[in-house]
Amino acid sequence: MSTTAVTYIGGPTVLLEWAGLRIVTDPTFDPPQTYVGDAGTATLVKTHGPGLTRAEVGVVDLVLLSHHAHKDNLDWEGLELIASGPLTISTRAAASDLWGGSVVGYDDWEKHQLGDVTVTIVPAQHRPGAAEQVPVVGFVLQKAGEPTVYVSGDNLSLGLVKQISENFPDIRLAVLNAGAARVPSVDGNLTLTSADAAEAAGLLGADAVVGVHCEDWQHFSESRADLEAAFASAGRAELLAATPRGERIELAL
Image 1 (cartoon, rainbow, N blue to C red):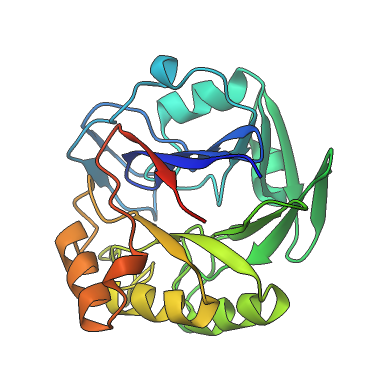
Image 2: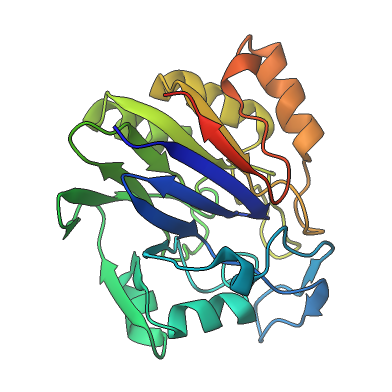
């Protein structure tokens, strides 16, 4: 088994070193700024820069892009990373819309084989109830002899987390997007609340959780402190990995 390590970069973005691969989730590397949305989309404000620049991250073997429609999951520097050519696995809409790079799009439960690594695209829900849905996915990473990893993407549904756990009962590491994101145009949370993230950890039976998507953007209504408090309240504080910004952390899995 190879070493599994994470480097928290900011927002939803981590560098995951797993099974000999260097994997970036939802790449956001821009400095703080305001992104003015197109008609019908929210204006988003980024408040903190990345822990590592795109150049400092170095070689990237794989990008896991939950969706491409929002700047807090794919910003201008993130687009430049994708355009530089690493394999990027995402939605079919992303594969259709993004220029450059090597973007491959899938539907829920389809699989991508990368040597002896299997990436399963799993469902995610990014808007509550009957609201018009943005195409978004999560990912499960598997390789013989390595810990199984779940990357949630922007998912708010515990029901989907339970479904994923039933299909993959051996998940060891979960990268969960939390922060209870909210925008004025949608009545409800767009990502897991802190309490839901703690419950998701229990549903998954994970040995470790990397909590992301709870810092650096004004529309995240819950913070890293809220996430830590929720895990402590649920009796799962030991599951939530400490991930100081920009520091490589090896995980015991």
